[in-house]
Image (cartoon, rainbow, N blue to C red; front, side):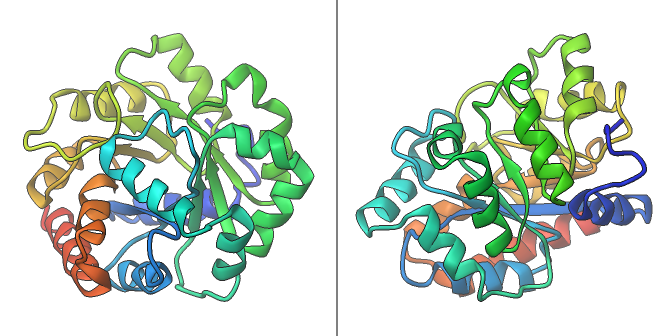
Amino acid sequence: MSTYVDEYVPLEKELRSKRDAGKKLLIPYLTAGYDQDWIVSVEAIANAGADAIEIGIPFSDPIMDGPTIQAASQRALERGTTPISIFSELAKLDVGVPLIAMTYCNLLFHAGFERYLGWLKDGNIAGTIFPDLPLEEAGEWTELANRAGVANIFLVSPTTPTLRAAKLCSATTGFVYGIGLMGVTGVRETLSNSASEIAKSIKAVTDQVVMVGIGISTPSQAKSVVRDADGVIIGSALVKILLEGGGPAHAFEFVKSIRSAIDSL
């Protein structure tokens, strides 16, 4: 269980409440700054039924991201997008659902913990994901962020040993991010068996909310995963739509289709 059992950070409190009420959860991902309408797309995604939204902060060496999200990040960087510009735009936004910032720890260490936390608070960010921040080096940041009410979310992969997974689940706040398959992010035509297996294995060691992402691309795949997981994270499939010029309206329709599929269980 979370270290902050009696004082859940707001993101964790909200997601736990929805899960405990029987709702399957949906967290779409998009890369900030990929074009001038990205904020409108955030609003559209929220209106389509997202329970939270993961905002990708572009970084020049995105080791976890596949070609689609790499392309979105590169486009954003070429437009001059910076963490400060992203959080400044998000500060003006009120979409009614929590926002989660996903990026790499180089940006965190370069800015410094206090400064980065200030950016997060200014941008109304409820949680963070740093896929390259090891558990053993995350204690100071996790403590500082959680005490400020900002969740720090850890990832568990299909190859994570059971004892290690339990430690990650104990340290995480907000939810546990189960990696649906080994490899980088990307659109997949078929769903890996590991997407459901990772949810089962995580649930065996924690009562945290368990979200599964990576390799989930269609409404039917999402529906299959939430039979075991508490919810799904949809990234590359949505970003691909946006990169191909689909715009906020198409983003809305896609997220709505995922919402409808997981609600149909």
